Amino acid sequence: MRLAIMQPYFFPYIGYFQLIDSVDLFVVYDDVNYIKKGWINRNNIQVNQQPHLFSIPLQSVSQNKLINEIAIDGNPVWKTTLLKTIAQSYKKAPFFDTVFPLVEDIIGNDEPNLALYCSNSLQKVCDYLQIKTRFATSSEIEKDNTLKGQDKILELCRKLGATTYINAIGGIELYDKAVFFEAGIGLHFLKTSPVSYRQLNDEFLPWLSIIDVLMFNSVAQTKALLQQKELL
Image 1 (cartoon, rainbow, N blue to C red):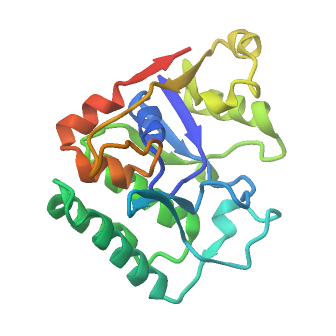
Image 2 (tube, rainbow, N blue to C red; image 1 turned 120 degrees about the horizontal axis):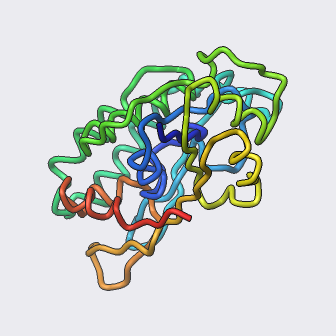
C-alpha cells in the first residue's frame, strides 16, 4: 500500500495533488506544529498577470500550537474579499464558470478549525478531479506521539500497513532510505516536472495555486498535468 503524509495546505500547487494522486492513502498530518510563513494557510494566484499572495487570517497563531489547534478568524469579510479577487482575476479564464462555484463552496465553508478547513478543500478538489485516493487524519490514528520526524512517519507507516512511503522532494534530506528499507518499507520522493499551460498572456507564471491550474484546464487536461512528475 502506497502512503503519503503531509500537513494540510489551502489550495496548494499542483505538486501537492500529484502526491495525493500517487498513493492509495493520504494522511493529513494535522498533529504537528504550525509553521508561520509556510504554505498551510496561504498561496499564490495571479492578479494582473503577477503573482498575488492570498491567505486565511488566523486567531492566536503560534508555532507552539499544533495545526489542529489553530482557529480561523471568525470575521467572514476575508472570504468575500478573496472571492471577489479571484472572480475579477479569472473571469476571462476558459473554465471560470465551472471552477468558480467549486472555489466559492470551499472558501465559504463555515468550519472554524484550520486543519479541518484545509482538509475539506483538498478533498473537494480531489473529488472534482476524480482522484480516488483515500484520506485519513493523523490525529485520529493511535500512535506514540512522543516520536518526532522520521520516527513518527515510520510509526504511521507501520500502523497503516504501508509498503511504500512517498514524500515530496523537499523532504529528501529528512528521510533515510536505508532505515525505511530495514523496516520493510520502500521510500520514494516525488519531483514535479516543469508544468506549463496557456494562461491569459504569453508570459507563463509557474507554481501558482491549484486554483490557477483549474481555471485554465479541463479535468482531463489537469489529470494529464498530474502525470508530469518523477519518482526518485
